[in-house]
Length: 306
Length: 306
Image (cartoon, rainbow over all chains, first blue to last red; front, side, top):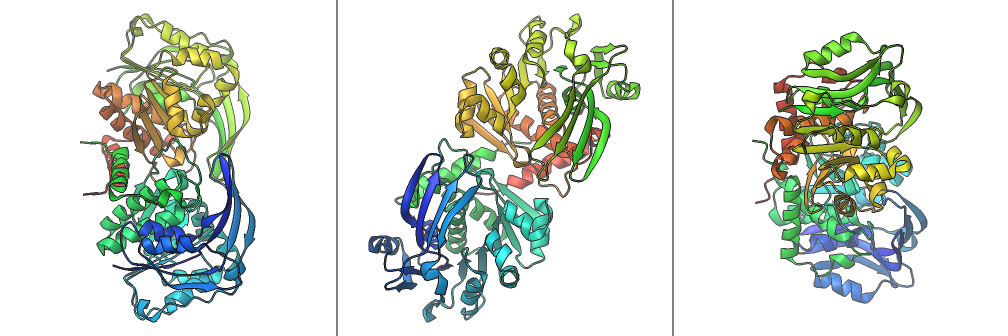
């Protein structure tokens, strides 16, 4: 099944305790589409770049099964740029610079032949743009997932709440779940967010794993895999979302049982992502490598309780 | 099988975002022994209190199968006292007051008929006292577990390293594992600590669960159960250790597979502990309540990956 993905395609400057990378490829939609491409084809992206975005990266995405008919390329303009610095523990980061560039005037257009998509991933972006994409769909997709962040809660809460009413799955980190719900307990937060619209709430806890809630009742937890070396967490949440939705689209199954599998596949893809800067580790993976990683996740929690 | 436990029996003042409790019963050995008492009897404790410690609490401990022959009661002296305040997220706390009282001169004495213990839990305490207890054992126990904290790394590192060479299991939180090993990755930290002595390293991550490492290679992860309400995290780590060692002593099985089960039982007991102040939630549990909680842990991570 095809997957429609919306989000940024961009450049990042990244500083971590272990190194730095300048003007590397980033953006939520980039990570989402590359991760999803290991599960399903085509991935159809709706995004915008300037003419500074590397042509060979676009060719690589096409090579991975990513269709670019919905990617606007603005001549004479610059791509979205973000610069950030991670703290020692990787759990917090400072934004050093944000240059909207092409994003400032982005008006998303879903090509007509894409408007019947079964699966839609609304990557982190202005809630009004996420909503504008949904509004262009000719029929209700089988599943719509949305990722967002605290910036939109601070600056566009009503728009965010409006789009939340139209989505099935929300992916959000733990602090953001607390902010959005006003609840400290993640269980209570998930219950409160369920009442805002999404049947499924996925709370991403970075190195501490991810929690999936269904209707504020059924729960599933997937740990993060302990790794010897984390190089760059940038894009891990987007990669998780891409792996998650890629698996759902591949299997065309939106049951809770299959969502649980999707969370494991998303977590496995994210565990690759953090092992190198930018999207480097998402290049050249094989089904066997992914299967082996998923097996490690299964082994990590396996216990015979009799 | 019997379990020998060493640690404080004490009073706590506790402030959390949701309330406060004054001069309530606390102490590592109290939590350890009550948690373990749901799995095995007798629990034999080596500790010290003043004559201010409530008689009815001691009778309750005996009622739970805790033998007090190794508990020194110092007439005219006061019990160890700790006061602390938890921050909004419960993950950090400030110590407001520490009064050593009877602990300042504590010289642990293991009664002769206890010196053949099969299972020994060295609760968080001065490393030299933990070592003094081990030195009184007539034979190498089947399993010795040790809990410690950053205070001893800062103030008695050489003593701590000495006792670590003699134990099988170390329980420690994530930041302390990083401090002790100098490694940020918990996988690398566990590998480094394994070289210091303990075959098993359990890294406690509070609301984020617990990781068990065997010889720095085999891993097992047990999440914490998402709870609607956390009232007081005090003693959760000790309760975990008590449930863990109680299960090991009950089953008399120190295989990695059984250690994994013990981590789940320890986590289940800790999930009860945090639901009320002090030891209140550890009173009056039943085997059925514990079995149900353990089942919830199993369900939380259950997924069919095909």
